[in-house]
Image (cartoon, rainbow, N blue to C red):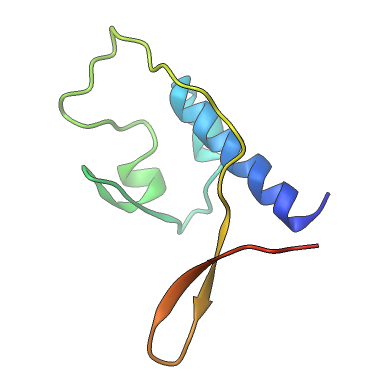
Length: 90
């Protein structure tokens, strides 16, 4: 499996676990020191994102969606700025 495929599979696993409320699988998608920033939360993934939802989240309604191939980007760190570029591996 290429790096690109491995990253894509991890993102698909994470999105699917989130959509199905499978918190153990979701937590397994993140390193212990991973951070997540959303419109409603920011901080360590395991503390502020896994098992959490916005205050207006309604568990009685299913999360509906499809899971397709994610867009994967690599972080390019320069001396004074950061930018995202498509990941071209292989």
